[in-house]
Image (tube, rainbow over all chains, first blue to last red; front, side, top):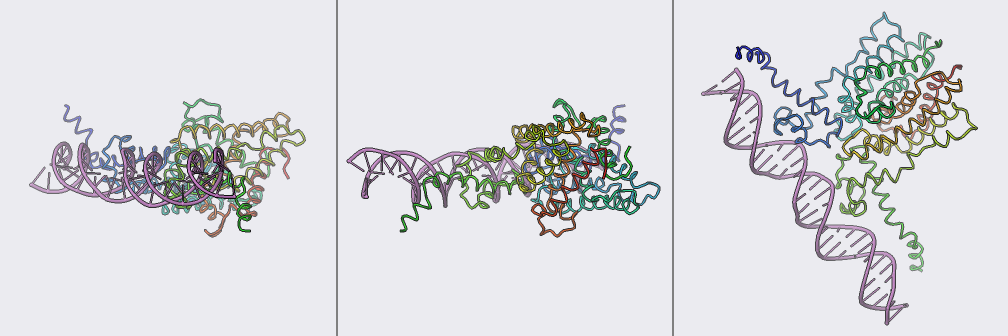
Amino acid sequence: MINSNVCLIFAPHRILKMATDKKAHIMEHAIALFAERGFEGTSIRDLAADASVNVAMINYYFGSKEKLVEAIIEDKAMYMKDRIEELEANTNLSEIEKIDALIEDYVSRIMAGADFHKFLYKELMDTKRGDIHQFLSDAFARNSKNFAAIIERGIEKKIFKEVDSILTVTTIIGSINQVMISKNMCNQILAKPNTNDPYHDEAFKTRLIKHIKSMVHAHLLFVNL
Amino acid sequence: MINSNVCLIFAPHRILKMATDKKAHIMEHAIALFAERGFEGTSIRDLAADASVNVAMINYYFGSKEKLVEAIIEDKAMYMKDRIEELEANTNLSEIEKIDALIEDYVSRIMAGADFHKFLYKELMDTKRGDIHQFLSDAFARNSKNFAAIIERGIEKKIFKEVDSILTVTTIIGSINQVMISKNMCNQILAKPNTNDPYHDEAFKTRLIKHIKSMVHAHLLFVNL
DNA sequence: TTGAATTAATCAAACGTTTGTTTAAATTAT
DNA sequence: ATAATTTAAACAAACGTTTGATTAATTCAA
């Protein structure tokens, strides 16, 4: 009985995935610590204690502390590849529908991965690990340009006003980022207690999406409600 | 002859200011390094070499590395105290004029102190130095609320649409912050070479102010141009 | 005004810790 | 038995900070 249970829990495919699972486990804790204390502000021993593993395991699995950061970014690279290309190709949607979809998508995904998002932006702001900084600068800039291309198409079609397309994208992304900077500050402007978690609050998510859409619509569209 | 010259150069008040000048000199270099590499990412020896002073001087003048950060923030506290209270009291200006003035003020001051701004936001994002994080959270949230109060007044007067006032402020500040995150990324979205300094470019400053005003006007005002 | 006494500033060297990383032995899984 | 995993211990290098000596600047009595 117990044996069969054990076999069930530790089925072959489960065992083969163990290394991956442990790596994922360490990466999750690393993201949370790096997001709050920064890369240099988090020691290997801090991380090992937080993830309940031996200090040597980080180098055993990832090679070095810096390669751990690269592993995190590579692992979540899918996070970066967003729906922009997919939406750009879709001819069934109007430009404003595409923009609305992107706003919803950005807010949802950033909030769902709040720690990872903060970790990414800290790496983007930091020039110390030059390769990573360059990679993230490129990725973020490319996304912004692709987003702006949709706005440009709307302007060409005369359904949008002649706005500064790249700065409009900057405003949309900047609006989301601004509330992600500090949970503490976010709670204060929302008049919520420090115990509140605004990043897993559906009401706040809805409110933020509504606000950004409202601003962007007024900015882009000729007709106002 | 020589003696009188020496006396002129090292006049009493000049000598008394020497310590202050050296402190300011160290703080300037610290802001630049902390902004690019972070607090933990910058060693006392890095800073001493960059500022061309002995390693012991930082602790001699500031007491510790952490107290250096506190000294920088206290010294530039005036930077935080912005024109909001002054503008709130001013009855000669309309609400939209006050908002326009604040947008110009924010963009100008943040761009003029780009390094300091990045340093401040890194400290705001980091929870490791708890007191500083709390102080900055409070200061930034208070400013946002005061700004939002002006928008609320405009809504009461029926000259503004019934917008989400605090999130509107979040968008304004977030728009500015988004371009300050990375010089590299900023140049890429502006299609400028890496050698360009967007933060001391009057044309870009004007463009950013124009864009934000344009968005906020469309968002707040009933009549569109 | 001069010269000893006092204070402030600067320095190289060293302090004890903590850092990221490696090792080699022990354990576990196949 | 073999290979993969985990461990405690040890590593050199880097860290923030302190030290004690040295120099420069200031004070003040004579």
